[in-house]
Amino acid sequence: MKRSGPVKIGHWWPTLLAALLVAGSVFLTTAVDTRATAASQQATYKSPQEAIDALVAAVKSGGIDGIVAVLGDKGRKLASSGDAVSDAAARERFEAAYAERHDLVTEGDARVVLLIGKDEFPFPIPIVGDAGSWHFDTDAGAVEILDRRIGENELAAIEVLRAYVDAQREYAEADRDGNGVQYAHKLLSSEGKKDGLFWPTADGEPESPFGPLIAEARAEGYRRKADGPTPYHGYLFKVLTAQGKDAPGGARDYVIGGRMIGGFGLVAAPAEYANSGVMTFIVDHNGVVFQRDLGAETARKAAAMEVFDPDGTWTKVPGG
Image 1 (cartoon, helix red, strand yellow):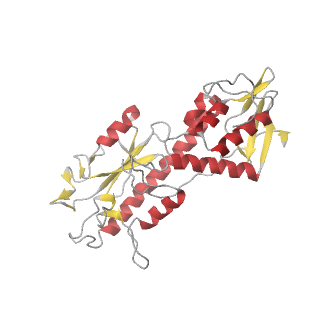
Image 2: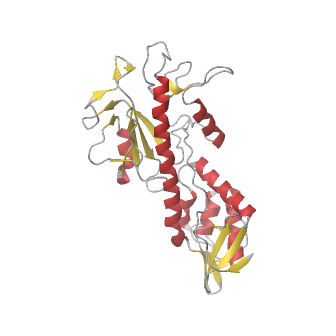
Image 3: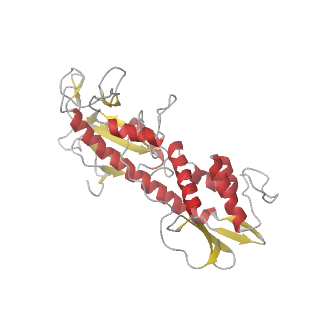
């Protein structure tokens, strides 16, 4: 269906705020103009509907290259955040919303916007006409899409850090591994041990502190990778084993005599800076989350981080 009129203000898809943890995390096919002869050249179409059909087909195919052919090279960053599970979920949400309802709204003589879902959320990238052909104006919608993705991922990372604090406090309520009461050294326990916040349990046994969160993350499709870290909604997580002079109480080790009894900390950093996230987050046993933009060196700086040390360059996340 195609109609003229103003586009309703709204989100493309609902924000996800699930407080989940990833197990194992540490750190087109459609007729187009012959001008689209290379993967790096954006395709053009005979009509806005043909452009939409190509996008939907590309999304359904699950491949990044098909989406890039439709949106152009600048669409690669939009189609791939570095988190394959999150990207697949985003494609599924688009498919479901499009199947539920879709309309085209004309804005002027050469601009068309796709509305999807029962609430008619506008797809951020408009279709524009030029000399009888149509293409997606990727530049016009890229900032909005990245802002939404980054915002959602950052909110999810903050919730994971808060859940980590709760899980550590629960872990320390009992002697989990015969070494006395302490905090967990790891997110995921070593095989046959309970030295992390998650360990497998049999039916009828109490769940580990991170048991429910791991179960939900797995239900989303997350699995531990054998060849590297697995991001959760665009973020990687790493346990911190000490605190610096700018932390409450001053510098000290959390691990004393092999036992983590001096406190705990966690850092969450974007898997791809400025694509899956911008801010890096840290938290300690006091439960206050801090944030900082580490810039283009985020991956290196976060990987090297061992100490919770929120100096003046870090700010508190609203709400603690």
